[in-house]
Length: 362
Image 1 (cartoon, rainbow, N blue to C red):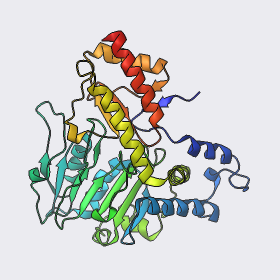
Image 2 (image 1 turned 180 degrees about the vertical axis):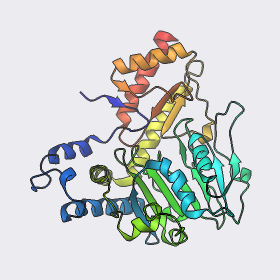
Image 3 (image 1 turned 60 degrees about the vertical axis):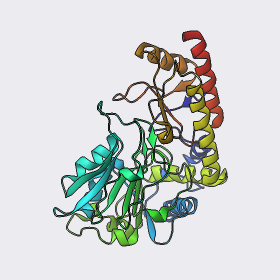
Image 4 (image 1 turned 90 degrees about the vertical axis):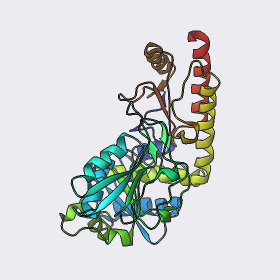
C-alpha cells in the first residue's frame, strides 16, 4: 500500500506516471531494452526528449522567444551558473530576499559580480514570514538582472503577484512551485527549477530562457557552463540524465491528460484552502507563522504548542500512512508539501487527522 507522501523533495510522483514507467521498464516500446539503456543519440530516446520539451512548451505556453533546456546540477548549480554567465566584476544584480534559497543564490553571485539586496523580509530571528511588497523594492534600473525565488519551501511563503521590475531581466527560481498554475512566461528572462517537486524525479533541472537574454551570456567560461552550448545542442551536448527526462515526460503527459495547469490550479487552491482552514479553526493549537497574503499553496508550515507534540504528530501521522510532515531542520515545526501529485483527498485525510489530533491532544 502506498503512503500519502507530503515530502518537500524529492517529492511524490503521480501514480499514473510511475505505472507507465513500470510497464515500460524492461522493454520500452518493443525495443527489447529499458529507456535507461538507450543511447541519448538514438531516435527512440530523442523522441522522448523532444516530447518532454513539446509537452512543457504547450502546458506553460512558452513563446517562441524562449527555449527549454534540461540541465544537471540542480537549482544549487544554477545559483552559480547564472552569475557565471551574466555577471562580470563591474556589473551588479538585484536580489529579492525571501529565504534560505535566495540567500544561497546571493552568496554564489558574489564570486562573479556585485549582487545587492533590493528587498528583504528577514526577521530578527533570521526567519521570513512574508514576501516583499512592490513598494518595498529598491531596484537598480542598470542591474544585469533581478533574481527572485517564487516559493519558499522552508518558511512557507509564496509570491502571488510577480514583481514589476521595469526593463531589467527577471530571473526566477521556481523549483518548488513551477506548474502549480498557469503563468506568463514572457515576463521572465530566465526561469529555472529543480525537477524533484512538480516536474519529475531528482537529477535534472529545467531552464526556460529568453533567447536574447541568453545571447548576452559570457563566452569566457568553459563551454559546459554556457547556456548557449545546451541550446545549440537541444540539451544533448553531453549525456543527459535520460531516465529522469523520461519520467518528466510521463509526469507532463499526466498533467496534460487531467486538464493541464488550469485544472491543477483548481486542485492546488482547494488543497491549500482546505488545509489553512483546518489550521485557522484551531488557532490555540495550530499556529501558522506566515502572513496570510504570503501563504504558500505548495508548502504549508505550522507549529503546535510544543516540540514534543510536534514529534507525536509526525509519528502518529506516519502510523496513519502519511509521511514527510516534519519541518525543515532549520525551521522546525510541521511542513506539508502540497505538490501536484498530492490529491485533494490526500489533504482531506490529513485534515481529518488534524481535527482528531486536537480532540485527543489539545
